[in-house]
Length: 392
Image 1 (cartoon, rainbow, N blue to C red):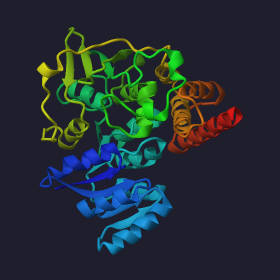
Image 2 (image 1 turned 120 degrees about the vertical axis):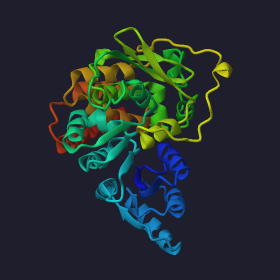
Image 3 (image 1 turned 90 degrees about the horizontal axis):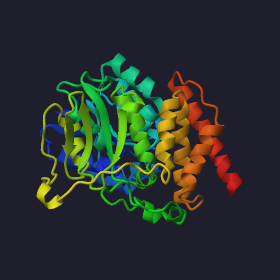
Image 4 (image 1 turned 135 degrees about the vertical axis):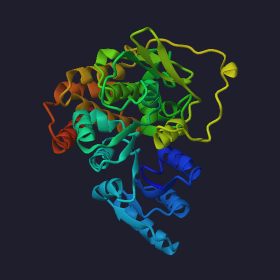
């Protein structure tokens, strides 16, 4: 039986991972769980799955959880803080690690799992956005397995040649076509976006996601981060990765071969499909996902992304082309900007403006190690906060 550590277990990807695991208790067990400060959600999961370790990033939340776990008579050990997140990723009972912590906070733990040679189910795209070279080098050096869980990258992986492993551009492949739903504001005029509310931005038409990722989808920054992730995962030059808006979210991505063939992965928009693929690969197992009724769907539409109205996608592609520390600055500035938008400190259109300003203002340079990456991340966040203060 394989132990699975779920980093970010109370988020949407974490919850869906546990749903797949519980359907296959004969194959998988939960060894460790982590969350930020959702004590109620974590206690419920500890009762249901009895992990050896539960980690809360927030110290106060960990104290509350520790008391409630003890009162419930559970044997789960409760830890707190960033170092404990790394311990959860490295837990000796975990053969597989679901890396689903949103944002830069998930990078150290995800990288730690890679360095322990585990199978890493990667749903934390920021790990590759911020430290792609470092991450992929560690993957090779430590013999870890990397299975992409983002629906688009998992689709690309499934469409690659038999026996494909992440980290190399396969012979015979011409390009990758990453599909994008277009988010809730597809087709809106630019002037209308200035009045968008957080509630509107978080109302994704196809996917049920957390607030930060939902806003990223609305700005198309999520797709920009996915372009960067795809370049690292598949060793692809940026010009080999093309974004195609596909509103139905049925084709999750495509791979075009040199002979003109295009392979696509289709399924209902349900994260349990890529999660089950990552857990079972190279086998297949049931995930509780309904069969795709192609007749009921009727038609599939495609269109190019509107880079003028949604400049975050263009900024991300430019950052990938610039290389060095530009993607680190992009990600840090975006996280600060999205948080400011959700708290009412910044209009929706201000997200791209802040990110663009930080790419111009923050010195980047080369990041050879994790500490340099995290230091640049901190500098970019501080600069972004100063930008916001100047606007107030």
